[in-house]
Image 1 (tube, rainbow, N blue to C red):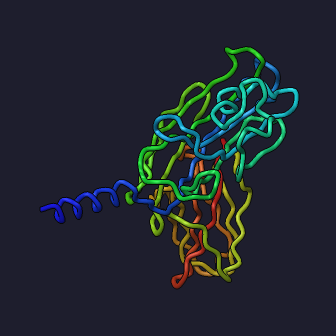
Image 2 (spheres, one colour):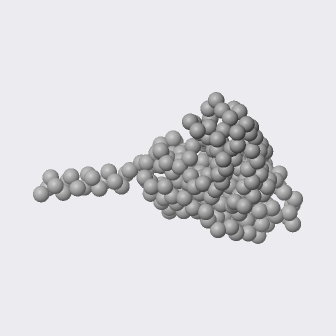
Image 3 (cartoon, rainbow, N blue to C red):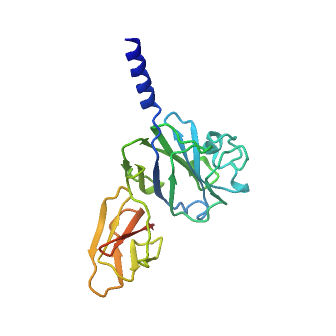
Length: 262
């Protein structure tokens, strides 16, 4: 009986400590707040546990003159509210830069690891955005999106609000979802990002061009006529965010990440 209980206990602990490899893809479009100070703004995006424990920073845009504008991220990442530029703020592996001069579509990924590079346990996590476009407290916002890291895909399209639109979130365990692939088909796509959802796709030979969202769901497909070497894709009817344009020649498929920022 003791042996059986021990086996059950060990099995249960193994389940609780599961560490599934995969990728979180996250995109959103910032709403312009031009009634304040033009288009300048600061932004941070990071991963937290379900209880708010810091895991990893993915984006941090700020400058010396805006160092007190990201207090929530600064404290959560190990620093103090008054200085998001301090070395104590953990930004390991993050995309960083100066104060932004425009609002736009932001995209990021997370590989399921913490700031030390260790794969974290499966469970419920949050991706959090903090944005500030003026000095006043009424000109900033913080919003979190909860998702489950595990063996199953978790794909969401949260509702727009006054600050963020075209929000797309997808946790895909390894082997699931969509990955960018290229081959010798000589595919080029422009513009990217697109401000209206329309892309021109050039290729040397293809039989079909399609587009899928982060979950791998097809949002566009069209057969290619004989001798065509270019196709215009009109994705103006889909929400802002990240998509993959897939070009097939009947044997292989070339997949290319694109961004729609209308």
